[in-house]
Length: 79
Image (cartoon, rainbow, N blue to C red; front, side, top):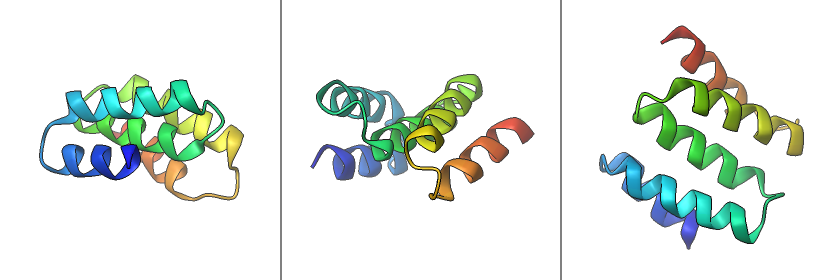
């Protein structure tokens, strides 16, 4: 539920609350790459590109087979 709520908030433009949901999720399960990805996108849309890159890298450490963190990192580096 936290992941879905964070996604909806991010896409509706409420990235600050999305960051809170993702951070709460990480406090409950720090090994869940999905929460790092979601927090990374919330950081990206908040123009906190350094934080987005860090979250993308953490997601890759936990789930190297996932492609989304690579996209997050690349877009953050471009902007």
